[in-house]
View: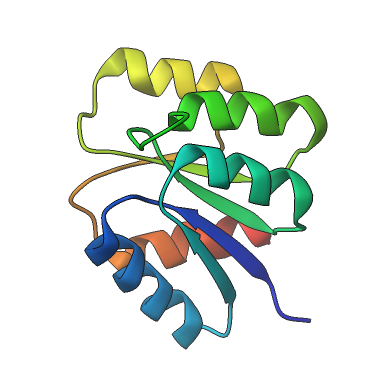
Length: 118
């Protein structure tokens, strides 16, 4: 059975690159570019992993994660360009499973997803 991934990332270059790498690994991928749509898709859809950028238009990644955790335990990987300790801690406190700093290797993201799905 194919695994579904939701990517919530407002930088098109990053979301397209992640989508390309994930589809090569036979994942079904949906992409959104803002927090409001990410929240809607995550709550209505059935995803195996969600990748959330922290800084997006609309709701930020933390607000989206908070909404997801009210009803779902879907594994979530947070993406951040800042890498500040308080962001890492806040993500963990809200229930993030992984935290990846930008810039990153798409292969590392695929590897983390594969690990979460085991």
